[in-house]
Amino acid sequence: MTRRDVLRFAALAPFSSPLLAFATPPPPKKFVGLGVFNRIVAKADAHGWRTWPMSSLMGAIAREFIDTPYVAYTLELDDHREIVSCNLEGLDCVTFFESTLDVARMLKLGGSSPDDLLRQIRLTRYRGGHLTDYTSRLHYTTDWFYDNARKGVIRDLTPHLPGAERFAQKVGFMSAHPESYRLLKANPELIPKIKAMEDAVNGREKWFLPLDRIADAQHLLQTGDIVGVCTTHSGIDIGHTGMCFRDAEEKLHFMDASSLDMRVTLEPIDFSRDFRWSKANTGIILARPLEPLAVQS
Image 1 (cartoon, one colour):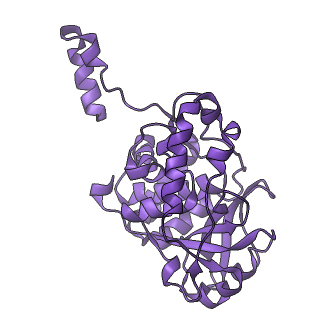
Image 2 (cartoon, one colour; image 1 turned 135 degrees about the horizontal axis):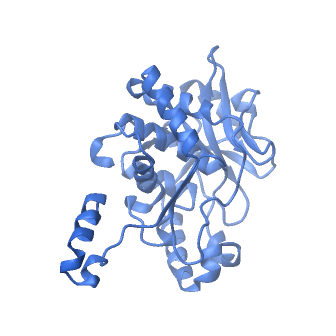
């Protein structure tokens, strides 16, 4: 139901059944960071960002988030409902690249309001772009890559890069540890649905770029490419995420919301050496944002 439909039903409510008026309510939503949002939109309009290629636009938006505090669990807002939300004042590694991507898509499509951004977030965050319940969120990064490639939001670069290998890591942490997740702990009936989703992810062919092959492929990468850091931790596919960023000298860096630095940062060292902070890291996966089409919004 669109916002226009909601207003139309509200106008008819005195003359119709209350059950009809509220039969299909809009999904709950929450937006934090209006000042940040307005600043980015104002800069975009002042400098013509909307006409820039996605790579350049992603880079400009990402730089607006530098030094934004690292804040975890900003999506866990209710014990029983999944809420479409955005928090531009506190980012974790996923909401950093997700917010950058969705602001870029919104600007490209002519949007200028928080509701316009939330529509893009709903498209990229949920399976098929549809929010049903907590299980419709794309919790695992390889699932996010798969679904957003199907929606035409990104192109999975990984299988096409020199040195790529099949990625055999299985997911299953959520169904094995539901007590670690607010909505699963409060709603155990969702656990079988999460397990079915994990089984589907595990049944797909996936690829990754091993750490020792990144240097051979990094000349093919550009600002705005989304990065997932592969891990050997049991039941988890990707342990960290971020973005590629090329500086003025065309040197490639990793940009992320770092739980170590507790802020969004542009890592200073060379990209190919920037994923060895943990012995559990095995390589990376990469995706390139595509120019959005109006039908996707």
